[in-house]
Length: 319
Image (cartoon, rainbow, N blue to C red; front, top):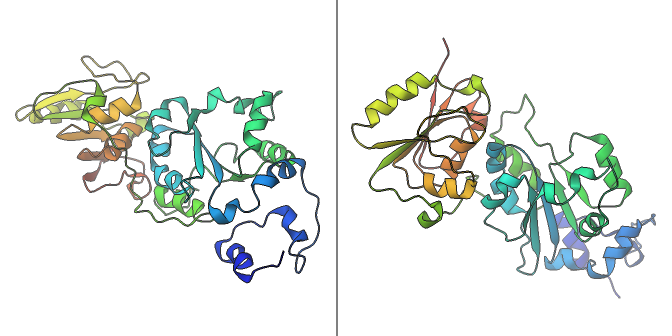
């Protein structure tokens, strides 16, 4: 087989890692190396898939609700360009219903991944991981022993930090997009979107209504609840006000509880306005397309605010 300049230049221009066994076909400029057995196992069906776009890629994204939603544009960019390619997402159990851009999504807890490098992993797990041509992982990025272990198995992991560094000044979504752009070409407006159908909410609302979620993952990020109540009284002159809470939030009388995040998103999408703190549910409302007023205290909205044409951010101070 003759080496075509176009064939070789594909790897140079795209930055695609050169498959380890191809040096025998293109000996000039390449040296021999030890090839891991898992590479050999994958090689027959892999040689030209990087060119044709027929990649099987796995993205592993744990984290809190808001962090996951902020990374949705980056996750979508990881989808192979060819329809014959495949993107699979492994994430926290609660986030599984939010992944609408690929049918291949699993809860990390169901895979046995948490046992990898700690105890004897399920045999099927290693088979599944070795079947992927690319594994992009925010899981285990800060665990050197985990990274060394998967490297020793020859698994094609690429690790990225799960959170921006303290001195990072980029918006979190741009931070995640910059990460994946080191391995794929990605055009994105940097806005997380979750397409919802009103019927999927499971709750029928009549007329305009506002939603208030007065909690977050940290009490320090919560605007005083008495101020939310004052705001609610003003809104009630014009529309119905619904209070919203999650299973880990403090008790809130007459609050709406919807544990399935996709169903919750579809309900929030119907609201005339949503008001909440810097929280995962605020990001969920923004991604669903609801008009959002996001109230930020100690956290920096330049990095962590939800994005969207219908999003407005207000700052508050405890002083």
